Amino acid sequence: EEISYPPGTFDAAVLLEVIEHLLDPLRSLHSVWSSLKPGGAMLLSTPNFNALSRRILGRQWAVISPGEHLYYFTEPSLAALLARAGFVDVRFQRQFPGFGLVGTMNATCTHEPKSRRAKLYRGAVHLFGDRVAGSVRGRGWGDTLLCIARKP
Image 1: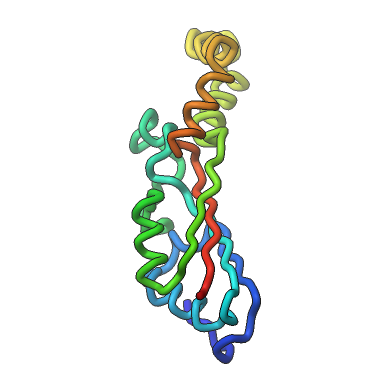
Image 2: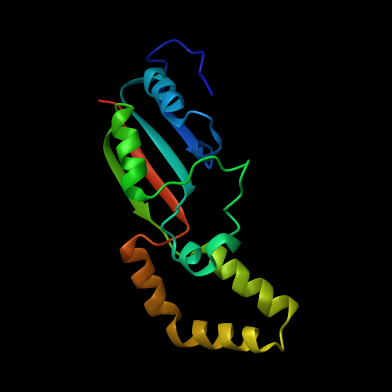
């Protein structure tokens, strides 16, 4: 969780699906910030606790994993944490599909293809897929938060 490189060593850092596993995310982000050169950038991804799939699936959302995922973030909570760590120019890329929801639907359709639920899922995707994807993306309800932040 700590980086042992001299301050200002790197132009960029990448933390993909890492921050939610850390015991002290703020301390770790301070370490990353310190290791970056002025103007350096960090790319970070983490599950989005505001995801539509989490809202629909609740505690069945695959990302809810006590003991493995120690923290859950939304755009505002992650932006605030990054600001506390000293990062600026935090920008989020809103993504869809929501893999948790789509994955659950695909698993049902694959393993129970004739079930009523699978027929409902296929019909919903056919009727509403494009409209839902645009709405989910626009509201920041995709399963993953992907952001870029910069050290001043």
